[in-house]
Image (cartoon, rainbow, N blue to C red; front, side, top):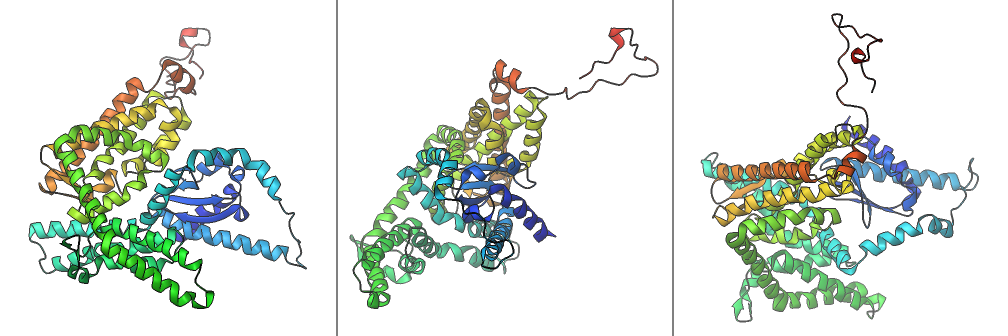
Length: 511
């Protein structure tokens, strides 16, 4: 039944994005189905957002359909299968002797005429070198998030069992399961980096594996002995990126007959030596600086830092740039077992939820918007903010700003406790909102950690609600938006007080 449901969702989406012929590529991240389109003008946005299971859409370098965690991983393969089936059917129909014959071809000029203006506007907005670089770096880490979440939850469970003294024979096994992936994460980062930037993935993984090889401890660089894992994911990213450029350079002059022998050998050798005698040391220093900065920022200016981080995170989500923080989170998890930044950034989602609830109460006659809020709020409580951002607050304008105020208040609350010495974070990245509770880890015990995080969420909800309710609308906005039938229908006439058509005072008003 579950497979049928996800296939039905994919089947409903496909014609609304222009059909199989309009699809260039299909990928997905934690919550979104990402589609590279040939002609954006063929997409039917309103109908798409009305499909059951679709939480919203996002316009970026790809067309992104928000389906939520778990669901997107199941809908994507069904969608890919339908696209391939559609293309196969089209090829069969176009074959000589087919009953229907080939369909009229759409020329490149016609496609350009249909979507040129929109495409150019999107390129101008999103194709800056800096944004493209950040997105490509994010693409390296996004596929790792499921493993980070799974291992993070197991690490949290293991810590709880160890603290309580329960199942002592199981604790070492859980520790091995939780730590195995993190001990080799550099290899996965190297593999994905090479794949993303156009190199051979396994070569990128091979070069990055040097970083975690125990034998590097025998080397001395810049007067200090190297440590296995020094540089972490940043070193793996740099090493694999260097390998990509060395590999491409080799292919410009190595004869084809010798390519299979010479190119991989030179790529691994040159990049490996550069990694051992430079990149590991430099990346290690950068990683240490990130950890020192994060700890110092929250221990000395926690409340103010939390206010700024919590208040600015929603705009990053809106732009799709929040995933560029993944390397920083991963570096902090490598160093201390958790990232102290994620619980603060999660407060932005709390502010968004509070703002959406305020919009619901301020616009009692706008049935359409209220229905959107009711359907998106459960995802919002679980930290999936895109439906509320793109379906509610951002289109309204001012409520998006007041939602940021709520995030800033929640961030300041959590940051204040960090400043007071109660430091805690998340053992993995990806979830936020209520979904972050199983991943919390801190220095002051689970009860204190959970209470502070819950208090931050409550502050974010209340501040987002209050800021939006009192300052989120101008009078003109209320006049324009609060339209529709009165949500409270008049009470029907009773036999003891019948409505008298002759008496206007006793005639029920029509709405």
